[in-house]
Amino acid sequence: MAQAAAGALRVFRILAVEAVADAVRRRIVPVIAVLAIVSLFFIDSCSACSPAVTQNGQPVELSQLVGFAGLISVVSLGLWTLVLAGALASDHLAEPLADGSAILLLSRPVSRTAFALSRLAGTLGLALLTGAVLLGTSGFLFSHRHGLALAPVGGVFLACALGAVTVAGLAMTASLWLPRTLTTLLVFGTVWGVGILETSVRLGAEIGGLAGAVARYGPPLAGSMIAALSSWVEQPLAEGEALRLAVRALAWATLSVAALVLAFRKLEIR
Image (cartoon, rainbow, N blue to C red; front, side):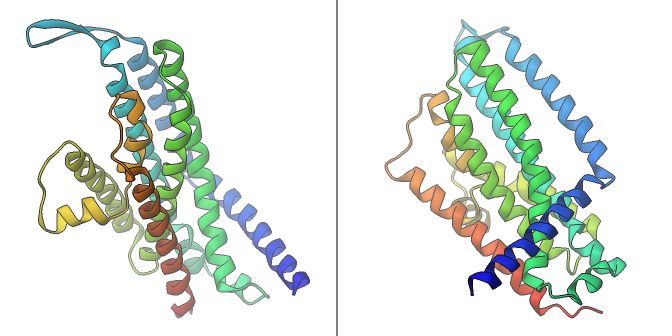
């Protein structure tokens, strides 16, 4: 039993490494690199400036509002990372199915579960590496220049990682039936749509119906990252809120991976 498990783990590791290498070779990677560099330049400028604004007729320096500026910047980069994960996943499994390379691998002693999970791991590896650079750099800049605590950024990355698993898992599942362009558009609209809904609810907006249910019970894509940075804006979380958000994020990530595995195992491959 142990020997079989070790063999399966070795096969998965080989497939995951190949999936990461395949993701790096994608044509979208240069675009990702350019957008990441532009984002870092923007954050560098944002964290360095300190213009004066007026509130109730009184001048307020940006240094007094830097916590909110930092939260908006970091959470926006986190959501961008989720979009990146979904965009990469939109054809990272569908493409080898279309070109026939998946059939060659699956004809060997490689399970469908291992193959699907390795492709997901390849997507997440590249997306989260990019996210770590963006979030870490932005957090360091706000911490170094304005004295904000750096530790909460680690919580943002963990929340971002669970969100990336959810988005990539669902996008990869959808890509088994939908074309890449449509899947990517759905990812973009869903991530930012859910993020805006969650933010609105946290600001006190009353949203009912399906949109309200999504904001309160859907994957906490933005909510968990905002909660991680609550100390930056000096707004303590309600009792048990952090635990509830963590459970929701973990549940959605688990369900997304399970949906991918189940859908791929049931898929008829020709």
